[in-house]
Length: 167
Image (cartoon, rainbow, N blue to C red):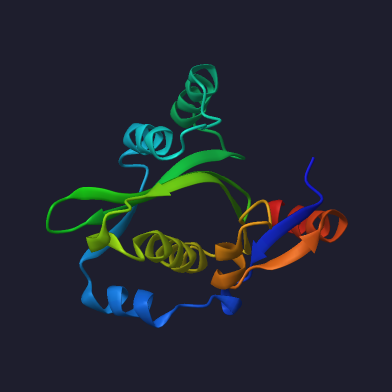
């Protein structure tokens, strides 16, 4: 069980100069649910000890293919427009007006510097434009989440906010 959560309120989003420069070039696009299985493959290649074991991956694939009014498993993919290549992506789920990140990846090649952060910023914009109340980035121990503008909430405070947003 988690005791702390990193939550992003969209008004607190921090966009670095390097990421803003990438945004201004318009060379990438963010899409939803177009390359779900490729995102899983990339995550497993990126994380050497991925928790996406075959049995768990099968459950995720089943959830992805089973529409629900209350729960949506989804993938967000950062695509380089020129090459149509998947550069970064993540898996997460939506309940009500919340989005929770589960795991992700980004290409580490030099030409894609800051593309992992770009994917996160573009996802924050997407969520805000689609009237989400908050983004649960999960465990608060990773500094990139705080750098993005997330605040750390203790479990009780997190649950109060989360329960309001899932209704």
